[in-house]
Image (cartoon, rainbow, N blue to C red):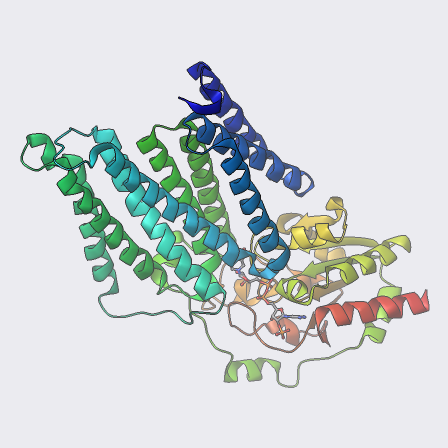
Length: 481
Ligand code: NDP
């Protein structure tokens, strides 16, 4: 150790890492509830600033002034992104962040190998745990980087469709084998037998990274758009694993802890999302999602059965309602209707109506999407009810207002075994007295399938943009109350 922290005992560094790790855990705990999520984010960020700051200063990697400048530049880019990127574009932004994390891990692990053992002519024996960790970091990091770029490109609409070809799984297996063999070669270390100088096998690491990069692209290219957010969650988990393995290469406990936390929480999230969509992870990665285009079947289902309504008529329904459930979906996010929806709920509550929001775990395009938007509009957390809690209450509900949701209220998940969403838990809105569905047309949602709910006897379609329709409903309600 040198630089500004020179002279301090090693235990100071260990203690700082312990504090950082504690902040990560406390931060994660905060993120388990919407009310404490923002604070949890700040606590974790403080842990990261501490971990990065102490590492950079302790090992004299940068001067305090350069560190401060780097923090300011990073904060400026982060702020710019946070302000500029729409909430609906968050999944691809998260995807890019994961990718950069994975890419950085692969590069840092490789650079450490070169730095410590790559000098020309050296036959130094490299500890097995270091080469094994570096090989894993290289493979997982490169898969994460390229996989995330493809996933973000698909979510942003830059890359379209799922590319499938015959012998697909075989090709992936061969590429994986190349990466694993290169990793095995690194661990066996021919240099240690005195046969090959250490520096000569360092390029094998980059061969491994190259093979893993190809694998990252091949793995994500066939996966359809509907499954992409699950892939982003999985890649998030992989970016954590890559960081943790790089932590072993660097012998850095803060990186090992932070990486493991990201890896574990990302994997839990992946599992929750798969369960909410009734998909297995293997199905997502290798099966492909049947994205059926709306066709003749749609016309058959809707023909002559769809009843449209107006804000005036919906307001009359609300006049006599005692219990109202509002079900938001992706369209509420697109239309940025959360403030109008929150105002409507407030007006109803003020008139003694019981109002709750029915939140499906995969409504929108990322976990917690609806909670975040409604919290932004100051909807009380107590009004947001999860699927299991709200489903039994629909039979006692007078009016359900579905705004911008489609797949999460599709009864064919329960009735049609051949449906791509068969078995997915959905909100049983049709059990209420009356259902009002607000969307712009009869177009399908993410799964690309028709929704028989729209043709039900107790369903009225309020066609229009979510924000405009909700604002019109609010104005109408205010005019009559
Ligand atoms: P859907 O994607 O099923 O439907 C959204 C509906 O919103 C569309 O049918 C669209 O119809 C309507 N819409 C779009 N823009 C507007 C607007 N401006 N105003 C009013 N309506 C609008 O959304 P859900 O939230 O019901 O379901 C989410 C889907 O995403 C599920 O299939 C889920 O599995 C999937 N998914 C979600 C993930 C998550 O983490 N949340 C992750 C992975 C997948 P129209 O064009 O007619 O207006």
